[in-house]
Image (cartoon, rainbow, N blue to C red; front, side, top):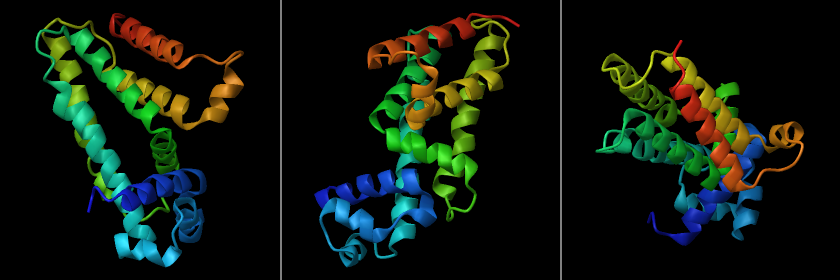
Length: 200
């Protein structure tokens, strides 16, 4: 069922609509039109309709982030702590680049508490953050990284990534000329590396 192309199209189209219109503003009719099916057909794939679609998307985001961030975090054998964190940041960048609608949806989720139960994502967010904080603080305690505010670094990184990918209007207002994808990614990684090397 998960490999069903119509189901995958529905998830992609629904993520786009939820990102742009929020949960209340997204319409099953418009989502189904974007996929080329009748609105009633959505219930064949998601029997609980819009709420199930939304929860499935948020759960998928949580699982992807956990896979890229938590599950791979300690597997960088042979890398310095700095390089491992930069690699983590690059993985988060690539996730947002591949799924800009997810980045927009995450921004909306941070502002809008009127969405349905999103325990799948918000319940996993502390796990992602704690794993990241723990890794940085352990590296600082062992002398691999200088002392800096790990929470501030994570907040900066998440804000930068989500804003760049999920708020294109902000990006175009700030930039005098558009960056290529490669330059944007390089700029982020360069700034991240500099912050990791800066002591309090």
